[in-house]
Image (cartoon, rainbow, N blue to C red; front, side, top):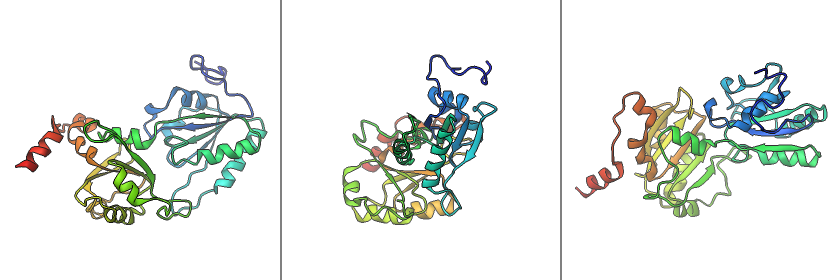
Length: 284
């Protein structure tokens, strides 16, 4: 298959027209988690504006002539402003380029995709949204932790660990989250993990509640720390857990003892009924 000459290489997927911007979710990291629409975008785009969490293996799926421009944002490091990124997308589209704005995870889940799409609307630039597998779901699955389990939770809350200022979000109702969410999944929470855990404990969550931190989710160098709400900061420092990371709090973390499918490939013996084993040990 000649990716340069075939404008629609994947079945009957959409043709990427010149002058359009496609906002594309690349998933949590493993290139196998790209959607067909995302792959189709990469194989047609003239320019790819990509984020810090998009790996080389994902970019390798672009057509050979595509121009790749880095527009990543990493805490504490020089990075382009959101306004500059949006203006660059508009500029390239007005040059009649096929512009792929490639983001880790899903563009509409703490990915600023909405801000960029609104800028395109304001500039009358046509666009398409291509959802991706969010790290808060796919990343946890690679760690063997289900976001929901009917014996544990009928609700889940997703939150970000920092706002536009870089601080812990002041708008979060920690009392409401602590009381209403049996499972809490946190993006970008490592920098302020201490204040986040303190807020949750003050709001009534038990220090002994299970928590997990997943670094480099879905990638070959993924690491997972199983800890508790009260010990998370100390354990994370001891294990040198660093961003990018997902943090999850709730009883679903205990299921990793049975569902760590990557660990099983490396020889881990999985528990057959971790929830029942826990209840029996507590009863004893």
